[in-house]
Length: 283
Picture 1 (cartoon, one colour):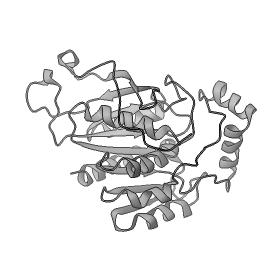
Picture 2 (cartoon, rainbow, N blue to C red):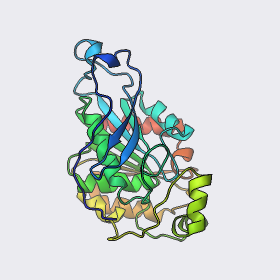
Picture 3 (tube, rainbow, N blue to C red):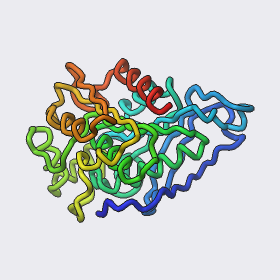
């Protein structure tokens, strides 16, 4: 499973045109550079239009958030929809299901080729006319937004990584040991498929993808926000601190008191702060 970027190509079964008047969310399948079908939803939010609403062209300064969910999430999960609901107050929102999750095709590579899924979603977002794109990732998705920003220079105007690991193969907490069992053992992958609606690839990484902490220095000059809870049961605070140190002056670290892990632990107030930060940072 190579981490080599294979382009930004994405094809959509729905195109923005006059039929999208009324500003309803648009659900469609995207196609990644390696041919994977990715389920996505575009929500225009409170779009400010330059001309008539039926042209579906947002003001060039109106930003769009592309949300990269955590492992076992998907575009229909309530916690993903809640994140989208808060951020739509600050811009348009694209949500999507990573490969192997929900109605998307293929099997999860747990953060490796998922960078191609995010690249397709970002290209899709720009296809609606948005000049500013902010990627927001949680846990596995948090590692993916870091690698995407490093491998696709200029694709994101700002990056937010929430509850992300700094390094691969971490087994220092009980939840991460359970996750490794889920991913690496045949019986674990059965639990993933039938219990968690997540289809997991049986192959090991070859080559091992660029680690999040190695990716971070390559993100500059795009602004980077790292968010982590001080009660995260998966990744202790040395992970966000490593990321922040690697980011240097172009990164910002928020350690959230009392917060646990990823989307479930990110309250509406925190998401609103992220939305406000992104609006300023991507401007």
